[in-house]
Length: 328
Length: 83
Ligand SMILES: Cc1ncc(C[n+]2csc(CCOP(=O)(O)OP(=O)(O)O)c2C)c(N)n1
Ligand SMILES: [Mg+2]
Image (cartoon, rainbow over all chains, first blue to last red):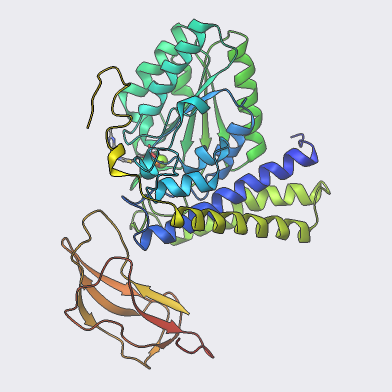
């Protein structure tokens, strides 16, 4: 696969490092009670988020899932504003009201994470319909987990996108488990891309641990969507390194299996090799990059920790659009 | 130095009680050893050490209530001293 230029490649690498460091740091803080309601760690899934978002335009829309930190970081939101939201502070993306599962900002093309498995594709489909109606030159991306692949609403939305040729890209962030349920045990037919093909759309099963592969397939899907050719379905096979939610240590998979993915398929390690081989950076420069990421995440924690809680007087803000005139 | 602490695992972690110490200050600890047992509203939980070393001071006594996130004790690596 052709490698992007040096600046782009290093930016892809850095973004994946930011996600990993952010998640491992936030996970520890969550165990210490700093993150209201806990969180879902996306470590291991960096290449899906960075591959997809790096192939999109800033104005393209995404809708995420309950596991959304990686998508949100890759969309260009800062570690500071996301960490502050996890800490439910006024400086967070959602003003400290949403915490980990409700990161988003419609103005910036992020239609939010949410707690309903399978909802992201429906939200993104609605956004795609809006884009088509307005004649905008952009696309909408709906993320969904492997678990969300077996909910009815996901396929209702996909069907509509097909019949209306909507500029929708469905990304299955397939980490192979829905809490403790292995995808292979619950996928009728066994092949998600084939299932999607049955709805009449272009569909691919791809390596979600390879940032360049994810980027390439997304980029092609985007071009088709902009050309009026309708939706694409991309099932990106990846792996979640930590428990389903913070602190969860289930008995449903072996430590060997986790170790095997981490040591042989890790998206960051693999892409570091690509960058080194291309002569884009030396090992020392990669280490420097990691150190600069470490500093950025520490700064985000300090920012979140020193930010104020939302003021009680703002409790009714954002409850309605203002038309109802609700007042304290 | 590894801190053994009460993990904040859910929304209802208000009443965590220290049930038992299985290691005493100065004891040799091996990775994987159970250090203490705590009780929450829902369950009892064994807290294990990930590293090997020597146990530091007990910061709480049996039957104390411990806030989620607080440290119960540390495991000192060779050469380390407790602050
Ligand atoms: C409609 C619905 N059903 C069940 C749940 C409980 N639940 C939360 S996450 C989850 C597993 C989702 O698995 P997957 O879609 O693979 O996403 P992942 O957690 O792996 O990112 C379940 C069953 C929910 N939040 N919403
Ligand atoms: Mg999953």
